[in-house]
Length: 360
Image (cartoon, rainbow, N blue to C red; front, top):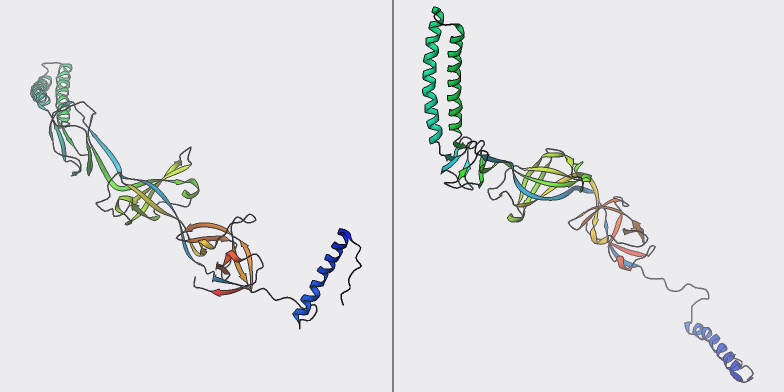
């Protein structure tokens, strides 16, 4: 039964009638519900369907990539040891030479003449010394005179050897096996003593790269690595760490690591830009998850959703290397746990879910 309130007029009476009208709504709704028992719970929220993957440990190679320039192991600057005019050149850039090959010839006429004169004086000094030795034995001259003749002979012989050596310097030869990379002189040039003539690239092909002080402590000579050369596309070349420089650069705190290519292709030339992939660690059982499932939030810098029973839970994680669409989880996950890989945008901590397993 609905009773009408006595009408007293004014705004207040209208408000009271309105409030009573509102009070009728639950009664009417309750009547419409029909068979629902008083105090029965409302309809349950449907679980959110998500796709999950079971975490399984797998081997992981932790690497770092460093960039550098292909260089010869040794750069040999061949210089003239004698002054003279270049009368012949036997090599050009790109020529491969062996130790002892003649690279250039200087004008040797003046030295050849001096050597001929010195040889004649040597013959004269040798004869005088022989006569002095005989006269000394016979007592016809003093021993001092004999010693002076012998000294003159020794000086003449040394003079001949010195001129022979200088004459040999007019033939500029390769001190090592290598490839001519630069020719500093041309035919007819006048070169001075110690002036550069040609430059040789000698030894193996190497790549010297800067490595962070945090990573270099995980490397040692002999470690295997791979090298890619930008000019040669995706080709990978086997290499090894030849040596690690003893000191770090003061400002960058980076240490130079020399990588030696084991079997370089002829296409690899000094000056090419290259990248060395260095192995820092090998983990036999690392926890990896697809990189897109790792989320960021204000409470946790990085986290994932894991399914425990039928409930989604926020799990903070610490990440390491990210590569190839996978993220290495250093801490926060254990093998066998189910990580949400699809549907995470609909979840909150404690959401009821229906998990569907997918392949890892």
